Length: 530
Image (cartoon, rainbow, N blue to C red; front, side, top):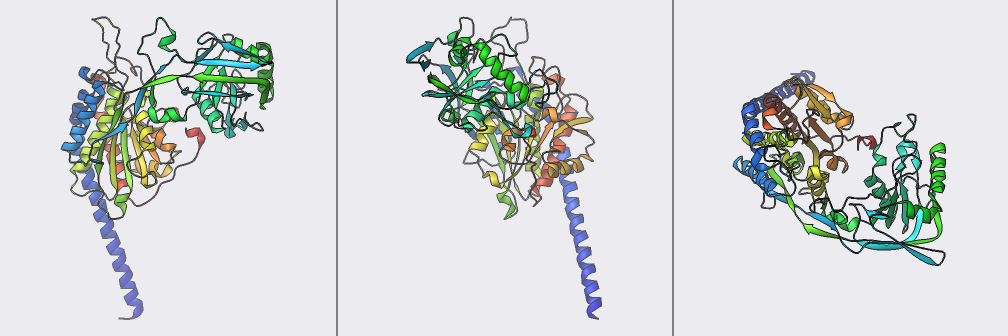
């Protein structure tokens, strides 16, 4: 046989072999999906949802004995399914604390040789994000406290806030102007007080004074956080929940009223003039407040109320790819129950859709993965997150102290509410942020048949954000908002079990593809996605 004929024969053999292997792999995927479809059924979803959203769980508040019961249920299913523990446990501790305002708080301004002390509650009030420390220093006015390169605006331009106490206005420039670059009259993330405080700390500020912007708001009452210790009517346990590890990063943060404004600026009208100048020019007008220093102290106590994420691990079968991790997760907490209620009324926020449905999908997908004769190439970590309703506490804790390196985490699939609205549609937040993953999901959906809707409005407020901020590609599955959200009417009986099962089947198909892939996925770096 000539060399040319040998070459042609060899190429034909390689092509035939490639097609055969592709066919086998395709049949393997089809076989896996067929097995999963038999496992992930409406009946299985009903079992999990009706358990997690039962009255006995009392709304799975974080922290509570009931959320611990939910955690034990999930861990029990992971164990019975054959998933492995991590570090010898199905639980990952999440250090949570309940904070209270302590007694020793003060705000003093030294000016022109004298010192004025201001009254807590009526003249200044600490926020719930305040730190437990005393700071002293010069005051720098930094306008709205915004750094927004996407809007070509920065209040910290040409001003040094390092080691200073900053004075910040609430809201945004031109907040009542429909033509404002800050999305017109719609608030952006830059108007959020917590975002302003994070930005101040990033610029080196050691303390933060916040005032309601006087040009657009008549009430300058320093509300801060409604601490029960400063009120005669609030329940004594109406207190914030925090990640204990975050406490060391905090600085004193208080809202100040008219008396403090007048002392620092001369009067409220002067501050209005400055604010008007910023709004009219859309240029920062930041400056050091001369001849004045501030002593600011806020004191809090922290009561340890730690909770846990629930973890199930499936090790990959490929010698190299098993070091790469796919995370499939959803939060299992909700908002608890009404402590003051009449005997005849429903008082439990069962949270069937939010998020017993998503948690049940995570469990069902885990059961399907465990049932496969062929294990995926990559490892898969299933996580039921605690404390999402308190501010993504469980997922934030995980990415701060991951069980596996984040640089080996190839993707995160988040499932939060998949049991309501029309059975034919499913919302996805992914296409703009993670086009590679979105394409896989869309291809797998051809066998499921959802109309996939890319929904920008749903991008925030769920656990994928914690991973997104760590540059980890993600998909977010959601069936849409509804009138029962965070109401006692979010009952198990309202769940469309067939839709919840279909959503879980889609998650499985997509996850199986990712877990048997060797590709790395893109995450589009866009601040508009946060």
